[in-house]
Amino acid sequence: MYCEQAGFDLASAMPDRRRFARQMFRTQRRPEERVTMLGEVIDLVRPEEVLHHVAGWVRDSRKALVANHNLHSLYLVRGNATMRRFYQLADLVQLDSTPLVWFGRMMGLSSRPFHRCTYLDWRHHFWSLANRNGWRVMYVGGAPGVAERAAGRLSQGSPGATIAVLDGYFDASTGSSDNAEVLAAVADFQPNILFVGMGMPRQEAWIADNIDALPDAVILSVGAAFDYEAGEQKAAPRWMGRLGVEWLYRLVVDPKRLFTRYCVEPWSLMGPAIRDLSRARSRNAAL
Image 1 (cartoon, rainbow, N blue to C red):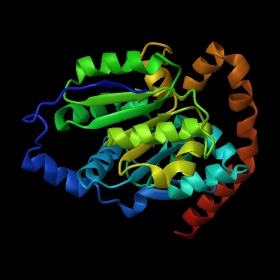
Image 2: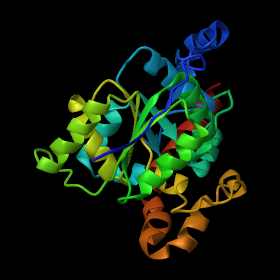
Image 3: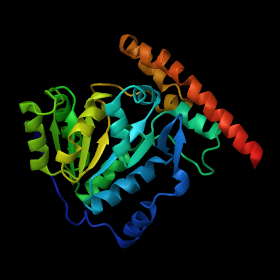
């Protein structure tokens, strides 16, 4: 069953012509935004640019997939065929790692500024847009009751948005009755935005396996986004994110689960990193 928080203000949902023109311009991808880093395709965009793309896809009623890469996903994608397929389907791949932002700048990948992009980086802008434009937003993930609390809080600040949630505790295997019920609920709600937060790589696998059955919506893998909105988890201070040590905060909070992710997996990327830096030096020397 899903929980729906409704509210809609028609006047506030009508974008003015200047805002519409800016969105039309910014949803055109710049060639230098899409790069290859550590063997994977990544879009070097700022948080506000992610939402320009999202708003354009919603306006066009287009199905689109927004993914994100960090050190953990770059490790997983090398040995997981479903993860590989997920990223091949993605229309936009955010860079969800401050250390990787620094690495990209060391490589000289872009002459224009770019930043880390995650739900926590653009959440306030997103809910402002959802409220103003009357978006229908659905979140699939989290423990029973958690997403409902998050939806209740978010609906208070964004009454123009319509929010529905489904918990992530279901049999997500293809063909299961649980999965069929979830897909039916999503289809019935007809979201403009579908957030999927079931942890990596489960959320990516579910999206990749069910992409054809999902309605025309902008689909985003967002991890524990609604856990933060519900107060179930506490985000690291933003200054730690800017310094690239947010991972340390998370490791201290949950060392048993995250030690391998943060202290072991990154070493597998040393070879690709050295090759990228070597190519970058050769390219710069040839200029």
